[in-house]
Image 1 (cartoon, rainbow, N blue to C red):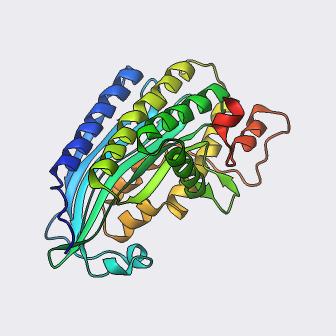
Image 2: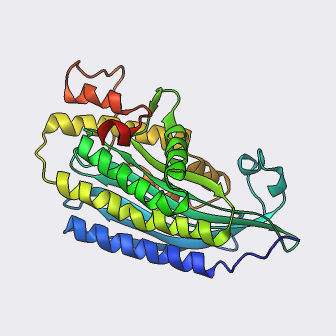
Length: 313
């Protein structure tokens, strides 16, 4: 018999509070726009196998953020889609519950990086017994005009919050996991300059929950100083066009590779909330190649796994 897990309430309460805190901080940083909440609940009479609900919050047309989305969800189901059980046969036929917070922020200024963060908890049961549980999450940074000071700050914060949980070894492992996960195979490039990514952490519950909180709480420490440094940098039509072109890579990753997107859509999740991560404006251009020696061409050197702390620190 497995050891009973602590009630879900403590994780749920932390995640709901995290959404509140991040929303307040981003509204303060933007200074103009406010989040609008779309609270939703799955209709028990619907054909969707998912039950539960959540709070999707969207900020639009701000002074700093063209669009910022952050969602809290608390959902459950009686079966999992094949994509979730293909490599986890013990989950076949199990009931499940998942709670999480996920965000993607698309700034207006091309010198302010796009960012993503996610923290989540999953548990599955069969006949009243827990068959699996884990924590997952992380945060990553996607600059269009990367600045070394920002990349270094981002990874220094990531390493510092890993320190109580295995120190350099955990940072190195979860940085590497991030580089490998957020990789566009068909483009042979990373989505950005990485950060942290972890999944299936199921050692000691209290320790892994503490790490989840460290990552969730550390996100603003990593991101807001970059926003403040870059929000007023001048830019023109050239930089804006490049930003919209590079946003296309974000769309490609989320729709082609992102496991969370696939799980949400295949399990009957709420489509509008799942796709809130997509940018409000984006463009594709056939055969685009930046001119050699330009700031746009410089980005390619950042779209590969690198030891940022050793190289820039």
